[in-house]
Image 1 (cartoon, rainbow, N blue to C red):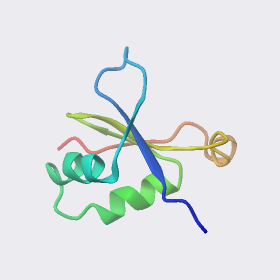
Image 2: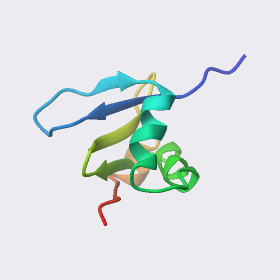
Image 3: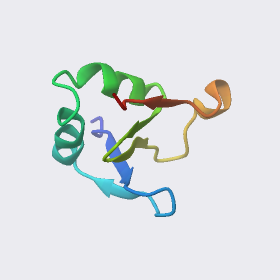
Length: 79
């Protein structure tokens, strides 16, 4: 059985990452965009999303396996 992805957020660069639910993630992204699927697809590819509300990322169980391949990727959703 596959486990659902988990997400993390930090509202300030000086804060620690904290785990959030799927609904909290969707709510945070929906405030900016009505279509959240492209943003979530980027997160599954290892990108951290930066918004005015906070930074979002996928929580990797054993670290990000793609991070060494893609480097530090960040997608800014600030309009």
